[in-house]
Length: 288
Image (cartoon, rainbow, N blue to C red; front, side, top):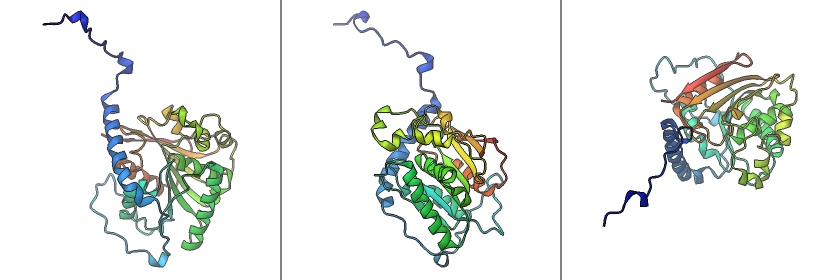
C-alpha cells in the first residue's frame, strides 16, 4: 500500500545561518583523523623525555629541497633551545610532527615537557615550567629559550613570562589556539579547576590583563577561524597594550590541527626566526 505523503512530512531544511559550511565540514573531518592518529601516539608521550647534553646532540639532519616561499636563513646562527608545551589532558606526543619539522630546518635543541594530568592550577604549572627552563639554560649554556605552547600550554607559558619574571629567560613565546581572554566552550568541563581558570573573567585571566610594562618577551599567537574549542575564536588573540604581540590568523583548520599542520609549522619557523615584530602587527596562514 502506498502511503500518502502527508503521513511522513519532510524535515524542513536548516536555516542558512545554521548550515555547516564546506570548510567547517572539511576541518571537522581533519580533526577526527588527527584525533585518531594522536590516540595511537599518545602512549609514547606519557613518559618524560630523556634529557641529553649538548655534547650528545646528533649531527644536523639533511634538509630536503624547499621553495623560496619556505626557505629561511639558517647559517651562522646558534639558535636558542625551543621548549614545547602541550595542552589540557595531552602530552608531548602532540608535537611529534612539529618537532620533526623544526629539527629538519636547523633547530637541534628541542625540549618537549610534560606536566601532570593531575595539575589543577595554572600558577603551579607555570612555576614548574620556570624550573625546567632554568635547568635547560644551565645544561645547554644558553641564557634564553623560545617556547611553543598549544592551548593550555600557551597560557601556562604566558603566565610564567608575564607574572613570574620569565621574560628574562623567554625570547619568543608562540601560542597555538590558546584562550588568552578565556573560552566559554564546554561548560560541563568546568568541574575541573584548571578549566575554570580558562574561563573568561577567571582570576588567572584577570591577572594576565594587568599592566606588564617591562615585559621583554615577544609573543606570536596563532588562532584559527574554525577552532571549535575557542569561544569566541578571537579569544586566542593577544590584546594587551604592554606586550609585543603578533596575532596570526589561520584559516581552514581546527584546534587539534594547529600543532601538526605543515603550513602552521612554516609559520612557527618564521616566527622563531624573526626578531623585530612590531606590537599589534598581524599575519595570516591559509590552509587550502
